[in-house]
Image (cartoon, rainbow, N blue to C red; front, side, top):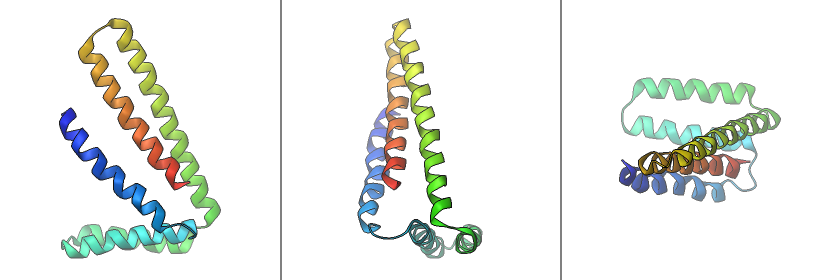
Length: 126
């Protein structure tokens, strides 16, 4: 399982990091619209009408309700949640280290690394 995560994680994180550069200078609502539009294109490409309908509804909601302040607040809430998750994972790792069980330590270390990667991604969006 660790090998799968190690292979997949760079694929997930890399586009997010690269995408951050293409959004510089744009407001947050515009970025959100572009991300949804990109997903709409994927749904059309792969002929997924249910996903397409949901994404179109999401795009309408963004166009109707998104303000840069609300988007920023959503991002800050997401970061706070990810920070709590990292803190939980650190506590779990410390508990596993106190038991001395290497398998548990390795498992909790991987979970902490995943949570930290999610936090880093969320922070990059701010």
